[in-house]
Image (cartoon, rainbow, N blue to C red):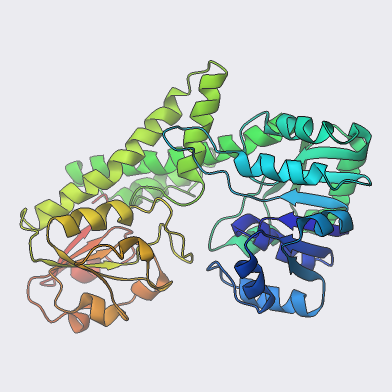
Length: 432
């Protein structure tokens, strides 16, 4: 099939490359000319394991192409995916849909034959209705079909999640469109993916409800971890004991820092905003948002206690600063709260992240990007394991840091607790 992916961010690029790998002809479109030039050279704008190899393979085979000419891309394609950003509006909880509507306008100018228009961006309920209205102002409804097909890709696991999805959700009442899309996804359905055909609004809400529920699980176990710390109980035992109940499941029951990234923060805010528009009080999700907002402050308070409120001139090392491992995504990472706070208290903060330098900390004179784990840890008073990269799981901290009486704060519980019980290193974990 001939596909067009408008937007080469996380969703558009990963989905486009994977569709091409399944044998489709895919055109990836972006208005950022520099990004398109780099993609043609095999330079990938995001950190995602395995993506670079797939881009080069499918570009070389000519199943995958990149362009900034949206008009030509639409005309050459039968199925058009909208994969642009929907960030939170300034001073609001609502999703900013301006990019969605701009793309809808562009599509309306270039439809000469029947097109299936798929919204793969995460959008509030009724957005598909709005897209349909915009396009129908210039184009007969017989020439297009607007569908909701949300993505469920995890950063760092995106390629695997695309190839082996739990479910494929298609929101359309058009039987012909549904048959075409079921055919498009047949290679994945044959591997065990569940295919769900629902209404367009239903598909839109499935995405938001899923992310809100997963965010709730994270906040729940983080609050239980707080109780565990007060009652001398190991939160990992609680997670295992709960997760073995099939009604609950163990995924997303790992205590740690506040949730971050491109999805959970903005999507929980957006669904609350949608609830308000439809006069529905989503009180549980509101509480989740507040709990997550308070999480970084709570962890900072624990850091202050570890240092006996003496932060000035202390060398503090952060191992990992992204919101999770295997991504370079800094969006709403708790390190963006914690590191500036410690820097303003005149600590010397060194960080090392496998995904490299972070421009977010450039303005702080006493925050430094270390070129290696050893440089980051050297002479540190406190080492904070903030992100669960594999690089940090088997480190010998006594070899990395010769300073006496240094402290390790393992915010991901990735180090073996027993290793530190008899040692001289002060070791703290989450929820124990």
